[in-house]
Image (cartoon, rainbow, N blue to C red):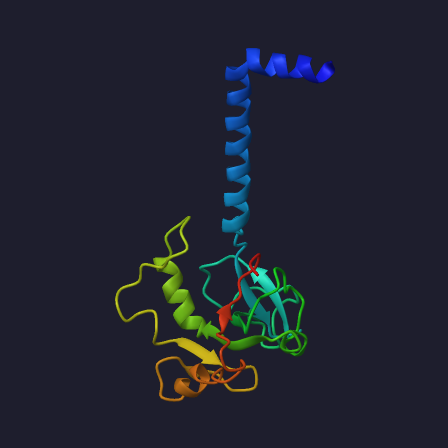
Length: 189
């Protein structure tokens, strides 16, 4: 008898039942789409390498290295934080602060090379920094003459020199065949 009452109620309120069914279907589709697309992860800055501790730390994107490191200045009194180019073979950890190159390599993540600027060049370029933006609007040719790069084991070389080719090719073959290097940024996998 209760089944008949429910059936009668549904028949008498078919418009309402139809609306509820459509809303339930729309909500289900939204959850399916959100699950398949994924939510964009927030980038929290970029990785820098502390030359005193040999560990990564996170700093604001768009800064010219060297920058202040958590451990303080290096033995010459200069900032010890340099920009780190970190790549993974498959996936990255969301937060690699405080990790060393050896710890990362065990996970298939590598600090491929470091970047910094000569102090006098950095001082000149800082005058071209636009307040509130991550870009430097320096005249053409001003950004690269004092830009330096190196691998963790190597010496600093000018980024425009022939020696920099060794730095930029140092990461070839880090991953197994079929795996591509992926840039690792804070907050991303």
